[in-house]
Length: 353
Image (cartoon, rainbow, N blue to C red):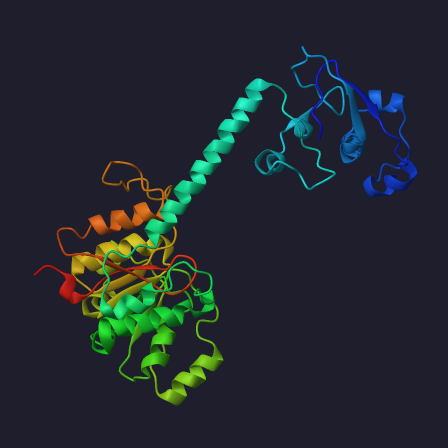
């Protein structure tokens, strides 16, 4: 769109209105009088659509302020600057009713500052992603999970994340730990995909899993899975619809499950992420959790080492790691899948004696 300034003289090339009106549903051919007195967005869309047919004849040297190029007045959404035009330099929507020109030098400076800020935000975001993909502990049994990195070619379908997590748990913690005690606690496990994958991977009748999720569901385990468990002589997962918090530790009916549990896990457990780490550290239980959401507004008391509120996923991971300083060292690993794939975990030997 050409920028018109005060004092500019222009000519409009001939336009075959009858051929073009159908595209904008104007209904009738406009004339100069109707364009002057009618400020509807429909007329502005037509002029904006064919504004490239304008030809600049003369521009006075003293003219600096850009005037409203489509009508004498703009209001509402028509006076809002088009973000696509600002950040991409052009707008592909030929019927866009937003403004595609800058009013003055002050707005030009503001737009330039906003573009600069956007570039800085992108650079900061790239640094955050790179830091998220870092792994502070590289061990032989987790190297192959680190090789995938962030490349789209190595990302596996998100539907496979439960299977990937289950295999990783068996490789890192071992079958003896996973099958020990009263079994494994799957926190915020939803429909129990992680627990079921562990059963299929181990095919052990000694394997016991309990899903702790406050959201009850009509169909917990499908008929297909129930038949498979019966055929393989496996114990189907048990479901407890309560919150996993400090009350769970003292619960008269479920408290013993935590004390006797061999492992506490959580795949994208949302609000329960902090509780998994805190309770596992208190009880000195092995755990593995894949954090996803931060919930800054729900947990305003969470602060970084500098006193800043925890607002990003990297800050949440740092906050969780700080909790283990007096008890042991939380390690990290990456699963070969897209999205939030960083695992925070501690084995029994990772705790201080």
